[in-house]
Image (cartoon, rainbow, N blue to C red):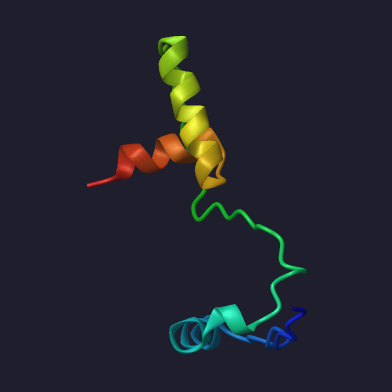
Length: 82
């Protein structure tokens, strides 16, 4: 069964995008041409270096990969979590 899906609408502002996502049934839309996008929301002003056991780093990288984000960003998210 080949379902026809609605074309993705033009969303000229953040407000329009938020309204669309809140109200629309996204399963009705053709998402076949979408691509993942990564955004850094703030400039990185400092860097640190520390050592971890290899196993722990591998686990962090695996979890970040599952979430589809770079492992450094995942680590920053963990550090900033309340």
